[in-house]
Each structure stands twice: as structure tokens, then as C-alpha cells.
Image 1 (cartoon, rainbow, N blue to C red):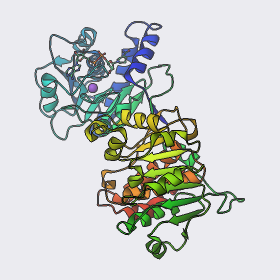
Image 2 (spheres, helix red, strand yellow; image 1 turned 60 degrees about the vertical axis):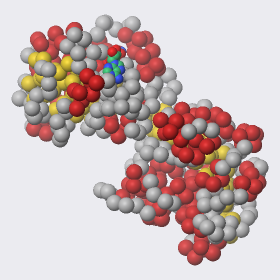
Image 3 (spheres, rainbow, N blue to C red; image 1 turned 90 degrees about the vertical axis):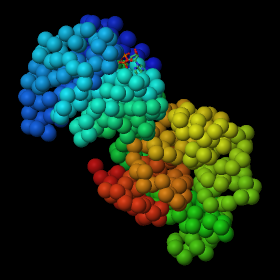
Image 4 (tube, rainbow, N blue to C red; image 1 turned 30 degrees about the vertical axis):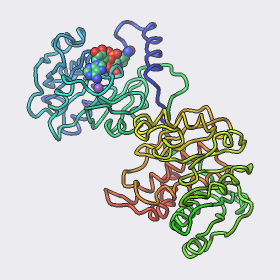
Length: 475
Ligand SMILES: NC(=O)C1=CN([C@@H]2O[C@H](COP(=O)(O)OP(=O)(O)OC[C@H]3O[C@@H](n4cnc5c(N)ncnc54)[C@H](O)[C@@H]3O)[C@@H](O)[C@H]2O)[C@@H](O)CC1
Ligand SMILES: [K+]
């Protein structure tokens, strides 16, 4: 599990630790970790640190201080280090002195053809997109040169991953003490590249966000035992599809069949299409351990969805099922509920413009979970899963899905996801766990299909799910 902490939490932990350590000790730990990653990168690229040309982009705060001290360490190993300040009047004094003492120099512009650029413009003290002086420096980063960001890429919001203007795109980010949510959530996550965490000894409370990894998912997957039968493994019911959208039913069933439930039951007008593709499907209503309601239902089916929500079984509501949901009805439920909106559906549920959901995905997922008393899987370039309350796995950090590819933004992909997550609900996972595991497997399957980069069809994602399971379960 990778856990991420808000700026406020990190600052509090830093204050607490700093009070017990000699002045500057934390920054030295940070700089040592940063220099080690830079040295490793230079050694891999050119065989040694000695003689490498390193450009430091240096901002006015402690993030710049980290860069200067790390630059000093690299200079002592024989690198030619040039620091380019955002504002020459505001530079970390100790860091500058250390760099100078080690033979580094100051310049007004990024030198030609560096081997490495270190982005020490802004860290957790940055607010909003880069202002002009910082943006101008970031604009000087030559194409094709590896960029190592100090703590986080300058210009991304540490708490949310939002980018309010120009920002640095890094190949590697060396972050200190703890991941920040913005390193796990897009667009920040994409801007960060590969993230190295340097332990500086912080004592941290409960995280703000967390990202599952293979081992976490493997632990949650419902794996049959010798005593399992199809009913004990769970039956998932699918209320999906319409004369207009029969394909949604087929795709939701496809996802559900590969989600770990023992059987899939389909209720709706697309039974013929479903059976033609998946003869293993049970048809018609009957006892289930979870329902998936919504994909491709079309209009005027809210009554059927409400009927399922009135039952004391876990229900996943997606797509058309999300229209006009009654928050009171959902809050009164005792069985787990999982909502799986995309940004537009989330905006309608919250009664806010779509842009505000897109600009603040973390807050939107939390607000939805709170208002509807349900686990919420907010789809998007980084899928988030917020817990509602105890029955849905509530009061936990927001789960940030680390898998996926933008090729998954394709018709029918969400139907596969909802079937898959519903199947996991039927197998006994909580709303939040079912959502997080489904998003993880779905994202992995999408990557397997997209390979190095090719269009992905939703049914291929469903077909790649067994390979995603195997990948996750391979130690
Ligand atoms: N506090 C600590 O104990 C440690 C802090 N460390 C480093 O310190 C960093 C935080 O340092 P600071 O609090 O000094 O903050 P920053 O170094 O992030 O810089 C904040 C300053 O940048 C300017 N600024 C803010 N937003 C801007 C924008 N959009 N465009 C241009 N300028 C902007 C402001 O003048 C502000 O004072 C961390 O990210 C980390 O790199 C590490 O050394 C580890 C220890
Ligand atoms: K930075």
C-alpha cells in the first residue's frame, strides 16, 4: 500500500521532528536522498557522476534549499553543477554557500545540453500554477534531458494533483517523508513520473489517500476454496441494457463473469444478446448477493433501480441508474452501496458544474460519499474511491487507483467495470474494496490490451481480466 498525506499533515510531522533534531538535519536527509537518486540516474546514463553537467532550477524556499545541498553533494563527486535561481535575491543561504564551497556556480539561464535538470523551484509551499519567473525557467528545460523533481513537480498542487497553470513534467520525483496525494492523482501523477520516497523519519497519522499495490489487491481477491460452490461464491444480478443499448448489458455481464462471483444473473430486455454471447448467464430475477443497476438502462427505469435499492443486499449503481438518485433512500440503506459515476454524473449528483468536479476530484468523491452515505468510485484519468460509512468501508482514506491507461476512455469500458465491481461485491467485498479492486484489475487489463499504445475495445478489457488476475496473484 502506498499512503499519501496532506501538506498540513506533513508540515505538522516535520515540525514535530525538527524540534527534536539539530537545525538543518531534515534538509540534509532530504538532500542526501535526492543526490543519491540523481547520482544513480547519471551513473546509469553515462557510467559515472564525475564530469556530468547538472542544472539546478532553484526557487526561493526550502525546496530550492534541498536542490542546492544536493547539488553540492554532486559537485563534491566531480559533477559540474550550475544553479539557476528563480530570484537571485531569494536563495536558501546555507544551500548556496554549500554549493559554492563544493565548486558549483550560479547562472542566469539553463546551460546548454545538461545531463540532468533538477527541479527545485517549488515544493509543498507552492500555490497555484507557476508564476511568470518560475514558468520562464521551467520553459528553458531542454527537450530530452531527464528531469528530477524535488519533492514534487513544481506547479502541481500537492494535496490534489491539480495543475492550475504551467507546471514542470518530471521523469523522476524524489519526495520526502511521505507521498503527497498530488503525486498519486492525475494530472499531478503523470507529471511526477517515477516517484522515489526518501524516508526522513516522520511520524505520520492516518493517511489522506492510499494506492493499492499488487499484494494488497491479491489479499482482497475472492479466491475459491475446496468447499466453495457457485452460491457460496456469490451470485451477482445485473439490471442493465435496453432495446436501445443491449451492448451495455453484454459488457456488464462480461465484466461480472470475470469478477469472482460464482454466477451471474441477468434481468432486463437484452437477455437474447447476453445469452448469445455468454451462455453461462442465468436469466431473470432471483436471489442474488449483489445487484448492479444502471448500465445502458436508458430513461424511465428509475423505479426498477429504486426497487433494488429497497432490498437489503449490496447494490452498485452506475450510469443511467444514477439519474435522480434519492440521497435519503440511500442513506437509509444498511447494506453496502457503491456508486460509480464519471465526472458528469458526479456533477449532476452534487448539483455542481462538471468543471468543478474535474478541478477538485478528491473533494468531489468525498462529498458524494458523504452526501449519499455510499462508497463512491469516481471514474477518470485517476479513478478515486471514497468510502461512505461503516457498511461501505467508511471513514477510510480515499483510494487512488494507480493502474489504467487513457486508452480505457472508450465506449462500454465503464459497463465492464461496473459488472466487475458488482461481482466482487457479491463475493463479499465491501463497497470501497470492491470498487478499488475492480478499478485496479480493469486498469491493468486495459494496459495489457493497449500494450505499448493501441486502441482498446471494452470487450477486450473484459477478456484480459483473467490475465490481470494472474498478474496480480503472481508473487
Ligand atoms: N520543512 C521541512 O522540514 C523540510 C522541507 N523540505 C523541503 O521544503 C519544501 C517546502 O519548503 P517551503 O515551505 O519553503 O516552500 P517552497 O520551497 O515550496 O517555496 C515556497 C515559496 O515559493 C513561492 N511561491 C509559492 N507559489 C508560487 C508559484 N505558484 N509560483 C512562484 N512562486 C511561488 C512563495 O514565495 C513561497 O514562499 C518541501 O517541499 C521540501 O522540498 C525538505 O528539506 C525536508 C524537510
Ligand atoms: K519541485
